[in-house]
Length: 507
Image (tube, rainbow, N blue to C red):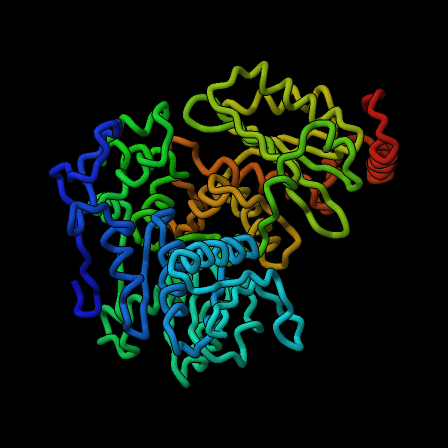
């Protein structure tokens, strides 16, 4: 442990006196009791963080272990002090998190009799920046902002960066926040990791490995650490008795969370403070973060797809037992390919897979599909071509073909012309793609095989973009004895049927 790392109190395995005799949870670790046999409100790491008076605090943490809630207590406690004269400016991941942070702070302020008044969302400067504002009895305020860089500029007082690594411009955000504490105040930055090529990770490594020039107090709390502090006891107290997690001890709960993660890389990063290696990932996090759209806009039903105004295109990556079959639908509208549906099937009979394919292909605005015809996908692609003609194309996954499919996905994310779901499994599949150079000097694209597939969602998306690419549509091989004019006429007739959605007559 580096000198800058803060140690905190762990839990105990002897059942404390404060535990209700009717408590049915199977946890084995409890927070150490306070004087008089009282139960502590905060776990060891929470108590250490909320009461740390150092002005530079930095924490890498697991998901969902109560860090924002704890920080809200730290803010309320300071603003409750008579004579406290500094405002606090907090930046959250999004507007919803900003509002929740204010709500938490207001609850603690009520307990501390700080006279807090929720002023709601307000415009806070001439640039039109807004914040959720909490006013305290002594005249200070807590401004909880979404991830807006400009809103932090020119403000004086405390600074909080919640999920700091998830801000797409976190280096610039820190550069704007830091001068604000010149005349007093603290800086708290806390987050799960977001890859290794990230300023948050740079700050962590600088503190631990390069002498800590900025003078941080550094906290590291993994899921395992939280469990050792008594986290599962706090959780089981809140759960209904029928919840299956009541029957878990710490090891069983750890394994449960691990099994639910999108993949091992995601688990290590989200819960164990191990940043993903951006050096080997083909798709960096910032591209995914900048291209996400809400789940509700990427989970369309057949009826919703039928009502789409733009043209639809389908990518199908075929799997059966270990790999997934993925149907990825994009809508091309105003020059942007919006993901509208991602359907993943595992251990599903081919008859059911084909029924799903036919339902999508029979949509009046479905223009074209590209199907992985490698291995077990060959017959599926052949039957698709028999039924839908030129609208359904089989794609054989060779090394060069994978390269041609992969780069347009990255390019679409870079120029914001391809939008993807805010979904952990999609993110895991996209992140699992690695560009490798073979001993012969050839480039190949490989995806890690996990219990949830083999980067199947990535290849489904890549095939959908291929289907939606104008230059790939209706490329005909020369027909002996017909010449260029016949082929041109054939292409024009196919294009006319496509526009009229009339495929009743096959070539």
